[in-house]
Length: 256
Image (cartoon, rainbow, N blue to C red; front, side, top):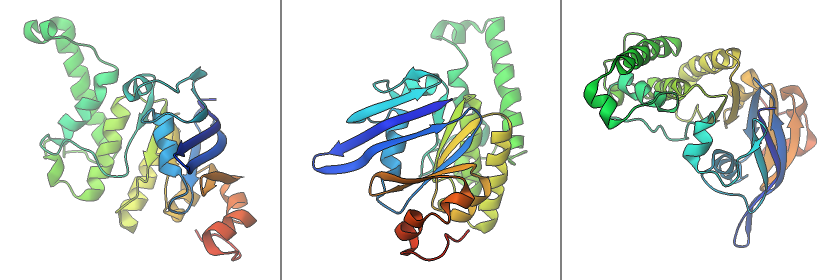
């Protein structure tokens, strides 16, 4: 089990954003967290990634408790996150943005940068080679020299995925990856996420696009008003009475 969330509760004064949430993400699994606006999804992601601590509960990653660790410590263990709003270095090229992602698996110092020892040159060659491979993997082959802010928004999303993959994650957290994308861009994104998962990387995503969720998720966790109201396969979830009530007021199915 790569991720185990147990009885996670987060209170902000009298507001309970997460209320006793528990679920697991298996090794190499693809799990989605869905729910109406205000359901507590982003708060839950912030807790899992180390951006905030729960009021109560436990989050274990690869068997170890990570509550209390800083975000960079969580990322260093192999839990890597993207955000709802694209967060690229707009003044850097696409290739340079990807290269930044290798910080988790590379080493260096002021001295090594100054003296350019052989291992430093070898490491830089490795970064350049893998950067090209990752750009090709997400469909941005040949665009490494383009400034990040000159890429169309859909390609910026893909670039963010390439940078996240550079850190060699064991679990990839995707916070609304399809936000702002059109139908064609979303389809391209789904293809990339599925190929990432086929590499053996577990994926946990928050997403409002139900077509995307129903296409790629193996299991779905449904939140409403901070509580988990359902969990199961896409077919189980889209006909679950509590999910229908939360989304559609009791209509026959969640459309996908």
